Amino acid sequence: MKRFASALIVAAALVVAATGVPATASAASRPASVIAESVGTAAPPSRDAGGILVTAPPAPSDMGVAATPTISPSVSTLGVAPGDTYTCPYGYFCAQVWAGFVWKVFFLYDCQIYDLYNWTGTGYWRNNQTSSAPNPYLLGSSGIPVRVLATSPSSGSADWDPVYSISPCY
Image (tube, rainbow, N blue to C red; front, side, top):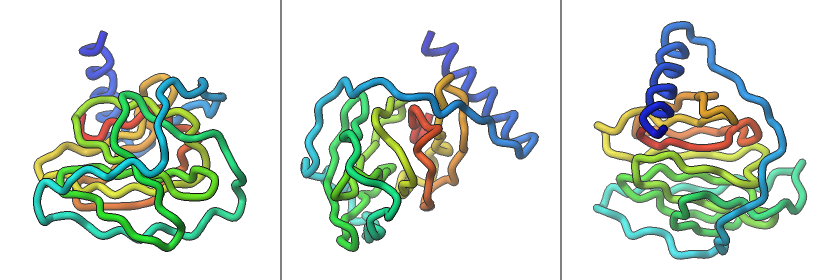
């Protein structure tokens, strides 16, 4: 099944690359969190001195307190107040999602598919993986890429509503 899913991701990415038209997915409600994580978990140690200092954006004005965003399998996380900084270590894909009062930063390292729970609104990402890592994908409800991100080093914003999983380098 995993090989089929991987082949489906690659095929969809080729369609996106060939046509320039990103696939879309429904923004249906997401299942409740299955992995308990706490904001403030220590960030992963930097694998070398190539970490990138990131400044968290201001709090979104259109979002109140939401359910705590989580990811499966679990990864290191860090709660960052608006305007504060954190380091996205070399070799990592870092994703920010609003968690009510802080930005919750997720540090993704392994090349696998991470399922997202309670990720809503506009967030941000920083790709600081090795230069040889493939493009990261944001996947919709059917596992089809809704967006293919730039290779490292790169960063940008993302609408997390249609995103159900992330593949940082699959």
